[in-house]
Length: 195
Image (cartoon, rainbow, N blue to C red; front, top):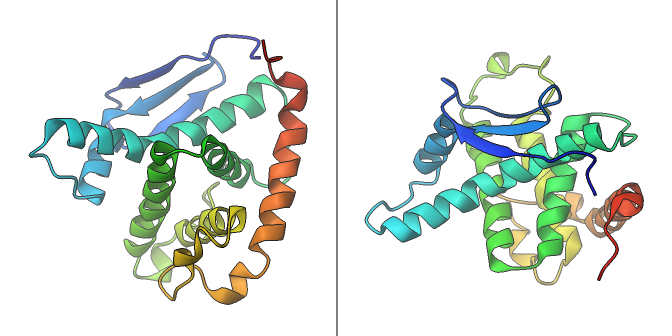
């Protein structure tokens, strides 16, 4: 239950960006960011329907991330630590709880996006340590860890040198359960009652 409507609009921004604006209570996603996704994921443009669907998947994680920011602001949720990390957790957990193919595709797209972004910085001096977001490689591992921890048997394919190292995976299930319980508790007072 939100105290106000939460419009989500797509528009030209002149830059690759998406954000929640607490002054207007709107989420805005730039077409430029969506265009970048089409390049990152090398989506096949020959089938217009498949192309459109893949772009939706690619932007899904980003929209869920921005919804997390909106929930923190509109519901005055008590977040300690980095809000950016917290809303990455929200986006990941929300998509995991949807438990369908679209949500799974969105999670994979989010993970791949962080991986591609991290690979773009070859020199440590290029990294922006003052940015409010964690490093893309950290975000990559954090989301991977939550996904794996939600069902280690089902997501066992994520254990590899290129994805989740075994030493990080050891605590993934406990971490998933802890973070899931925290978000459930934060949102419980604001959930609509089932009909």
